Image (cartoon, helix red, strand yellow):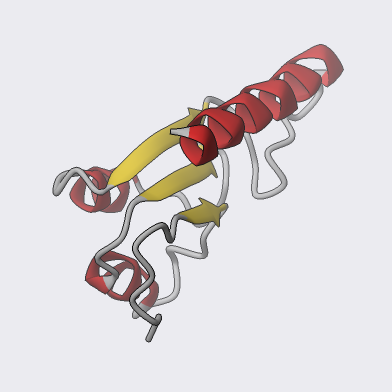
Length: 96
């Protein structure tokens, strides 16, 4: 359980959504969050991601083809771009 801090923001960087209780724990936290996950991550589940995003507390940063490390297999330029996208999303999220 997190303490109540008015300016608290959470970055969920490739969360392990495959663990049975993880999505429920993320959903239970009532604070703004950034959800960063790749579509090729073995923990990625589009249905779970949609459910987590629905209440509007989480901002999505979905890396198409990114694995659990946000790398894109066989695509070095794409992996570097994914890193830039992730860093930009985190910067924007933290600064707002």
